[in-house]
Image 1 (cartoon, rainbow, N blue to C red):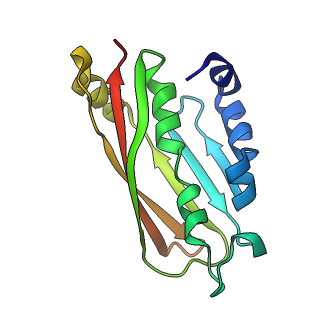
Image 2: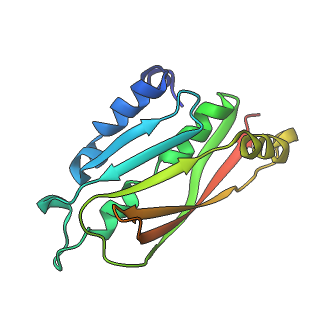
Length: 156
């Protein structure tokens, strides 16, 4: 992460504000409602508007995906520090039911998971950790599930 961006994301509050005003999030109507001070958790939400609604009156699938896209990568970068390379490797989304109204997703990055990633990348080995992220509506119904794979390696 370049130094300027690291400065912008120096605190959880700064990261939350920057992401909420980030062009793709702003354009999709995504709001980062919470980032834990230690970057161990985050919550995003998206209300339905005319600009993120598809032809059949439900949330546009691209907006559903964009709301969860960068979070695990950014949280992990902050938790691991600057001695690691962290990239998005792949992702897929499964649409479960039509999304209407407000939808949200929660991210947990536990100490155990960070320790596992550090162990797996010791000595410069690459590791491809995976996560499933659930996007739910206000009634708690599952709208979509996103499968994310990251690429992590210690810098040489």
